[in-house]
Length: 193
Image (cartoon, rainbow, N blue to C red; front, side, top):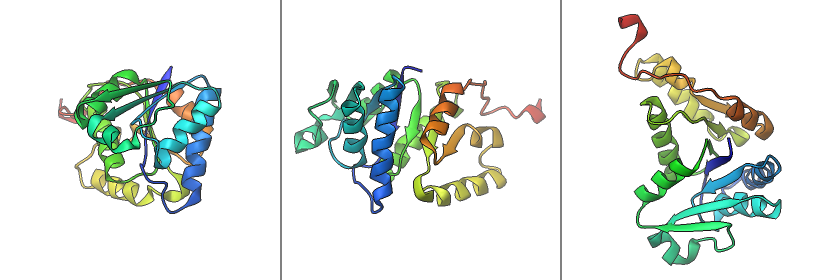
């Protein structure tokens, strides 16, 4: 793995632990020689993770849609900043450039990015690792819901297990580095063959 895409909030969140984790993650990526790919913003957790990675000597690639760039939220101190035409183009480029994905606390945009990349993995459109940095239990309620979804038969246990979750940055990065994609058959249940 050479680069990691981080999905996170354009706000800092209410708990200072979120920004502290974003900065720690940025430093860890640089120390491990992993490039950061992210949404290109200078605000919120996005700006925190990017600035920390840059300060620690890392490489940061941002991808931002023109409509957000024009509102002056684009980060102009990055190694590379791509300005694209749409949110769809942004996500496609992020997916193409990254070797794995990690989610920090964020809002509905962060969740949308997380669920889309997870869906793509479930459908076999990529075999890249993805995980969630669950700072201060931020995503506990979501994972309770996902466990219920699995129990109700709408999410297979194998697909639920695709997501690596931890509140410890080094442990989560190690888990993503050790990831080996297994073939996922969304539409074929092995018990049905």
